[in-house]
Length: 309
Ligand code: GLU
Image 1 (tube, rainbow, N blue to C red):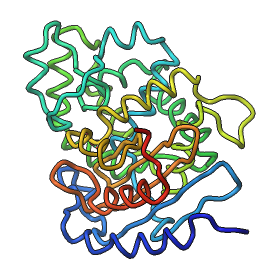
Image 2 (image 1 turned 120 degrees about the vertical axis):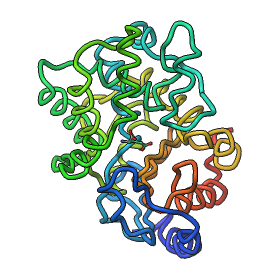
Image 3 (image 1 turned 180 degrees about the vertical axis):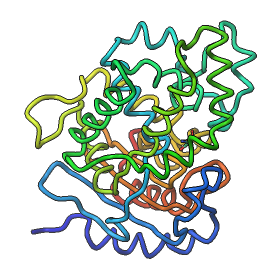
Image 4 (image 1 turned 180 degrees about the horizontal axis):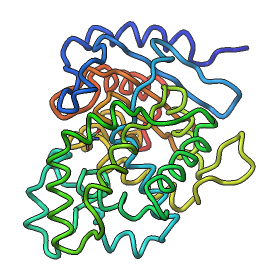
């Protein structure tokens, strides 16, 4: 088979490895602190049978904030735009992902967007299901459909570790409950949210999820559209404006690919009408993005002219 990306990917991974020593693995969720900061992996999916992959691409990691993109899509499919955006806004914040400050200054008090923790918690509270088990099973099935991987589940240890230490997310949730943004039991919401964040994938799963987002919610191996095209468009727009934390502006300029990162070191990229990209590199910069992953995306974007701008 002619390998379009193969040799380049190998070189790029070698090239960015040196930057892993500039970052640190997330340790505010204790179970994430054991990740090996020297790991780097990339997978590209173009809709054919297999991915082009390089580095530690079999390594499993948890979605963390990447899950926010998927719960947003599911909540929009469950309730429609009007209702979802009555609970959460559409504007980037410029603040860190877990910041509480804008919640108090916004009137009415609703989180600015679904990619920060407050917004994601509000969105997670909207997922339909009669119990947390049912909600989680719906979300897992959605991720399995998008990735074409029936084995996908969540990492219990990471979920528990975050649940036990998620006081800031609890505080955000209680604040929003007081202001009517969300209803229901906060610890139940945290139970669902921490499990959603602990869904475990590898780079190839991520690349396939990215491909579906890039291609109007379609997956080449599935008969039906998994995400309506309009929702896939909307979600990708949030990835551009708020997907890379408070580095989203610079990332749009340097890379220009709709992408979402998580504190596990994963990044999903969706090049509209083209490829899906999955990245893993747990050494993070101060804003929470994978140091090597950002470099890798910059190289990929420039080599293959992937910027949408
Ligand atoms: N579960 C993490 C949290 O809420 C996700 C953060 C992230 O990946 O940005 O803190």
